Length: 241
Image 1 (cartoon, one colour):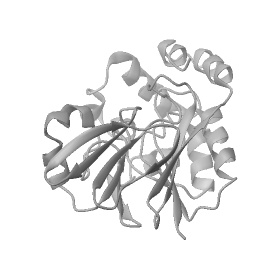
Image 2 (cartoon, one colour):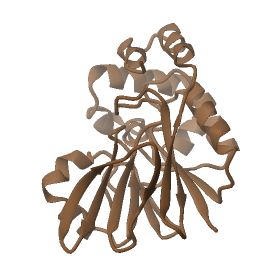
Image 3 (cartoon, helix red, strand yellow):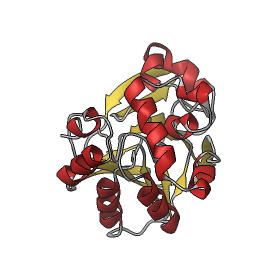
């Protein structure tokens, strides 16, 4: 049996990441993937990266990692987010910076595609922009299952016979039917925007195609306090609640 764990959008929320990894320790998995945005918004980028690397998590490039590269990418952010990335750059080591900006834009393992934004390998494009024509998105890659992040939301898209449908993704078990293709928006560890403030990640059994979404509580106030202490925009803490 092969089982993998998939998470995304940690956003330097160390308390949320620790809680997710502690929960994950209760399961046997063959690999752990983070679909980008390891940093940005949050107060502990160095600690998050150190822990991800220590645990051997396979991390992709998100738009916030891309935003560290140069001013061209940074211009795509609103002012508070851009300021947070500038501050993040000051808080991480040069070696960590080089590691972050060298993350791959996509990955294919266990028969699944992994990407931050929109498949096959677009980092900063939101899936919801394509909801009226998801068939074109599915046509750009061949894998039956793709995991994506970026929106901080929990949704999945299914495609069969040229027809696509958007479905909600809930806590607990969701079978990914073998006669359909699936694009799973896995939610966020550190900045959820799905109406539930718990950190989210998924466990996926490759053989049975069973996806189990885990919702994990953590010390939100501790992260909020650190956001304020480090001078990040207050909205980044307020919206954690």
